[in-house]
Length: 364
Figure 1 (cartoon, rainbow, N blue to C red):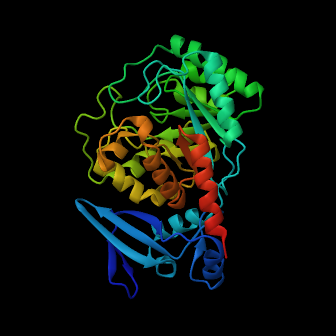
Figure 2 (figure 1 turned 90 degrees about the vertical axis):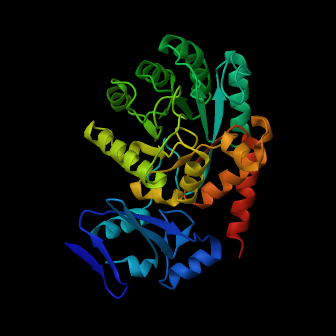
Figure 3 (figure 1 turned 180 degrees about the horizontal axis):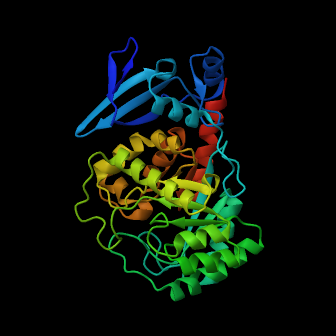
């Protein structure tokens, strides 16, 4: 069976996977006006709207891409109708934070070997002070990690990881900071939640530790599911995809379903496409180009590309701390393209850029 597109000359094989990515996102007066005209719809309860979308159908080895108005999408195919409804539905709060506005997550690595700032905050007191400064600068979430997952990084035993992160998490939580724990180990998840973490941020999407789903369910806290191809030690060894944005979408859709089956409600979830985790430069750029696609999962989207090697590959070789301009460009493009949260090293600079962009977008 094929689903014809009336008047558009489009037909989908019954076995096709269908995807929908909002295009030409608008804000401010332009968004309000075009929504009121009936030619656009609001994007997930935010101040953004879209009047067009890319419709993608994948069947066997064939990928077909169509650019359509939202009115042309309506009634086109059962999957597109469901996706269009999901893309319009307001997102639930995540870790108590409203998702109708952008959020900046500050990175605090309590590690000796992280790619950008390893060793700078290995002492708990230094990490706590840095995190509080980030919160004062406008970060609404602080992500605390005790194990580097950079390409080639060695695994850290949970006991050592807990020793590093638990005092930092506890001190920040006691001061009212919304803390995320960046870990792939169930024991560390449990210890961090006991210390006051409100978010589990797992690069393996709760698939790397056999106890992770159970611990996450029992914890009651919210969860970030990230895509990673392979393991940190090997993930950059010639990663291959049929079509990276859609392969990543399919994986994350599967992990959202796995969480639901394990008793973790969708409203507790957020997804991260995993820039730099088992992906080439071209894979990463393509995912960024199609970022709005991931909002079709019906959960918030987190984007973490701060200081990553992608910037050096595009802009010329430079050390991580020289990549602030590229990091800001990706953060702003990501937020305008569908991300709800950006995970960054340079909080004050990112908050300033985000606020400036928001002021421009809201101008009449």
